[in-house]
Amino acid sequence: MAGPEYGSDIIVDMMRAYGIKYAPTNLGGTFRGLLDSIVNYGGNKDPEIIECLHEETAVCIAHGYSNVSGKPAVALVHNVVGTLHGTMGIYDAYVARAPVIVMSGTGPMRLADRRPRIDWVHTALIQGNLVRDYVKWDDQPWDAASFPESFARAYRIAMTEPMGPVYIALDAGWQEPPLPERVEIPDVSKYAPLGKMQGDPALVRQVAEWIANAELPLIVAGRMGKTEAGFRGLIELAELAHIPVDDSGTELSFPNTHPLDATGTGLVDRADVIVTLEVDNLEPVFQARTGRYPRGTGVPRLAAQAKLVSVGVGDLQVSQTTTDFGRLYPVDLAIGGDPNLVVAQLTAELRRILAENPALRDRFGGRDRRLADACTATRTRWQETARHQADERPISLSRLAQETWDAVKGDNFIVSADPGGGWVRRLWTLDQPSQVAGTEGAGAQGSWLPKAIGAGLAARDQGAFVVHFNGDGDFLYGPTAVWSAAHHHIPMLLILLNNGGYQGEGGHLVCAAEQRERSTANRHICVDITNPDCDFAQLVRAQGGYAESRVANPDDLGPAIQRAVKAMHEQQTFALVDVRCG
Image (tube, rainbow, N blue to C red; front, side, top):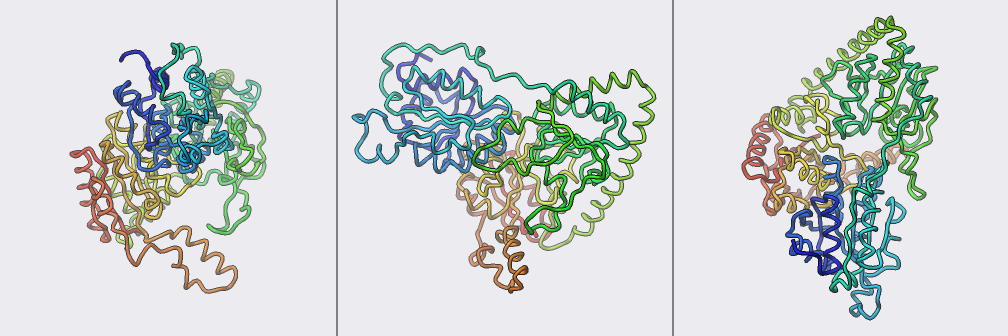
């Protein structure tokens, strides 16, 4: 392309220099100069606009894309109002440590350049204040010449662990005019993200000694499946010392086919040394709740005298405003460092210990037998439950997971989210890094669908597609995200978990009523999405996607999912199956 002529051309040059492939966007007049630069100066390639019908959709698509690709996308939102629309997505990315770069236009800072009224109500002093409490960094560069450094710093901060969203406000006053002078694009390799942190060698050596001398050590893994190196490194460590692994995260960190997979076995209660990897909030793992809805602390699960080790960098990004970090939990050792590197350090230390004491290998074999017994009991229980639930109406989540697996196994897929109960991980074969992308975050209603579409965008680049399970209530927060998927031919199979409303949240109403000894007969108020029922299939078809109307009979489920998969592949589109489930 020809050299830059306008301020906004510099923005495109910087995004291209950093390899930004996509820009999920909701149209805004305060970055009309940038839009022209992307589609005309840049040819709508690197970045390519992903057209969205809501700012939260744009931010969440960028979030989902980063979950799978490991790279940031740039979400474009419109000044004050667009930023406010996108704030839920930004906060969700912050909690999930997603490196989303959000850029918004803002009205001209030069007062004489502002249009009457509209540029005034759409301008803030300073606009980053709207999101400063839940981004890693924000900036509002003064002119086009200031933008290269601003973007370089934003990219570096977003991609440095712990990763997270950043925000740049782009003054319309310097985007649109011709460049007053030449602006140099720097060599971005000179401004790379900071290297990852290793753990303190003395602490790592202590943990290795504990593992070597333990009767039953356990690794609780979170966020370890985003890279090939992290995924394979964890397998190597587990196999070396015969350490069971409990994959507690929403993403896949350890193969469910591996004999050392301890997920769901309850070994957390029996292990004498437990190492958590990138598990920020320990309380839900080690405190058993007495029920789903009561508030307050649960019952401790740790065995007496068990040693607990926490590895991660979460404390480096504790918000001063929100409490997403969870309760401060007591541990015997806390190692600050990238878990992938600490795993490699632990592996090296255990190799040294084994070289000095080869007899330990025989002792390690006893761990396998204890795990095998626990796994056999757990998997037998799962299979019996699935058989018992096979013909239930409404359709059970176990039957739903099984029928979906039968339709996609052998295909190149990524799972965006596992349905309630974890039946996908129990019944599917999942043995590759990033095979379950995870939709972790703030638990924000309305964020799950667009994040899955963003994951589908990255999957499409890999010749794959996304399988996503989504609640009906969440779907209705932002159903127009379907149009973006259909319009851009993002292949995605969405299984709609249609239980007729916000039944999970409705449990809170029941809990409160029962505690107060009041009637639960009115639980449907604010909970049920009925009278009239929503026709989700028509909603999807109206936006150009493929849809199977509501399936209530378990025997009809498999054929409906297979038809949807076939249409998704043939039309390269979004495909939905509406399932009446419990």
